[in-house]
Length: 538
Image (cartoon, rainbow, N blue to C red; front, top):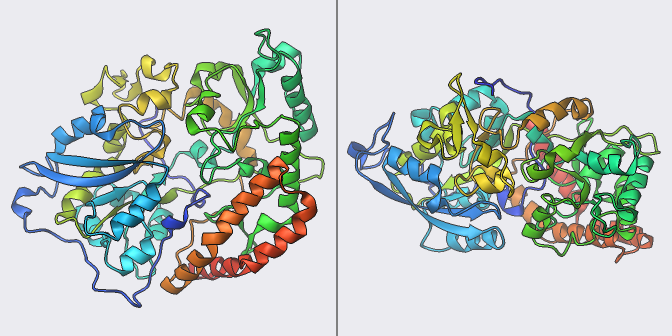
């Protein structure tokens, strides 16, 4: 494993940021906002080193819990960190379903936690009304991790800034190239291909024929020709839906502005949800669905059911950026270069950026925000990023092993777990699945950046998008209110229609009507707000 890291090119942010994750504000209409500084408990606080405090301090944190992450209060890494820091965390753990509604209720109450992780409130609104604090001064004064990363990745700092020049949220930072593809890397079951005497498909027509063979024949060789699922989707809940972004790239279209189907071409913003090319993408997926080549349970299954399909011998092909969810059968799959369609479109794999969205805010309820900042900042150092991933001396023999060169790797038990390494690791540390604020790099991500994934990079990298991508725009308070109003209904309509077009519930004869409805719902106005925000960045 590499012991050093290097800066990667700035490219934008992962798509599908929720309504609640808007960034940006202006001074207009602000109340006297809290600016975090040193508290009256300074005598108990250590500005550097460990412990962070001499006498134990208790904090209340609210956190969103993904399916394959365990209870933070029982995690070995966080238990060890409590010993290291003398900071005890009382965790309010909320499932992903309904988390945002809970956040909104808490922010409107008088019982805010000290911090909210992995599902932040509307930053523009809550920074303007003083519910969350400006952490810019804390970073300047106490940070060794974030401050250094902001210097190495200035685009991450720029994306974290509000129009008033202040920072209100701790970002996720991702310098791991394969992980920036947001699950748009395609894989195919080579064992099934060999069982059926088939070649690796290079065109979309060949790919469809292979999926049909997976459907009709006993590809896994277990005697049952009906238990194979030709193409599986990681998770169809929330904004993931049917992962249309995987197939959109085969038509040469991709999101590069932090919002589903929002693209900048020649400095012009287009939300291509109503474009002719996206219609072709949906028509293709509708064909896959009707032919039962695409898993027909994508809109009804739970996350657990979806994930279980990757660790069984039932999946023919899918799009994922790593093999952590299906490592039990990892040897059966090979990387699949994006198959070319018959239209002559150049396939593209869209990328996210080093800045991977806001991940944590400190609220006005926190009386010692400098302690909270130091607590989270450690995980943005190279040592701390390893620590939170379970790669530390304190956990040797439990989660990791120490290699002769002094670096760490996960134990064989973790890497070869039948549950999948992310599920196994998620019980002892919060890093897998983006379940915690993170700096993901080559040193702390062997659970996603395995030997297989490293070897797959040459297959994909020539298809990576060449133009820059951007973080979700920083809107002014006025723009943010208007964007919220539009997206509140438009996002729901777009998701519903996407699903209905794919399943056939909505005929493509209704496409023009769909386009007109989107226009009535002000999709063009939304484009204009994105355009204004983009213009300010450039």
